[in-house]
Image 1 (cartoon, rainbow, N blue to C red):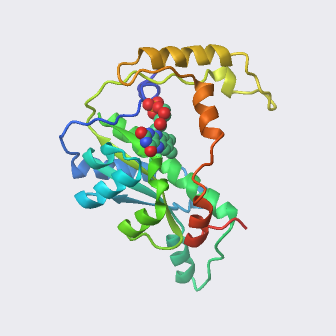
Image 2 (cartoon, rainbow, N blue to C red):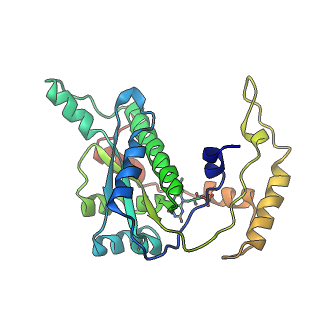
Length: 243
Ligand SMILES: Cc1cc2nc3c(=O)[nH]c(=O)nc-3n(C[C@H](O)[C@H](O)[C@H](O)COP(=O)(O)O)c2cc1C
């Protein structure tokens, strides 16, 4: 259709990288592109930490899984939701930020996700590939300690980037018909069985780690188990409450 759509539709997560490093100029371009994402109320509530230190990487790779690509990727970024800068803006204007609102949590988390996806797309447009690392939330306290992350800031996910050294098949996505509703919410699962079959085929035939799986199976396992229950207390401690 056009080059941007083609790029978007060519996405796949990359976890194996060539040793070639990513130039500082490219890192700058990627972060600049991230900053051009739309942002709630112009708040730009994010900070991105580039982690080069080998020992820090090793520790984050371990707590995130282990996920060796965190240690081995040429570039590793940690995307943080950041309300501290907003607090500074308040102080600058002799006002006090009233923290702890659920809405502020949503705003900052959405903001950082939009910026990160811009970064991912920008990186892919430069011939790089990468993967998000939600695994850092296995132990967000340690990540905060390692990266000296202050209150009112929390690490949402990491991102490994580099030049791809694998050619993964693409994971099939839900058909538009299942995502797009017209006028009002209408759950339509007529294509679910078909989608399960497509995913089953993908898992059976993919080159790396082929296995028996379907979409419903995978999601049912995830959703019928507790999901990082430490996050609520962690966020509260950081100043992100749910008022
Ligand atoms: C917020 C977020 C966190 C993720 N965390 C991880 C992770 O910790 N480790 C990993 O290998 N992949 C992670 N992924 C990648 C997803 O598993 C992947 O995007 C999904 O399975 C679809 O595959 P694809 O990106 O290859 O199309 C994450 C993706 C997102 C958006």
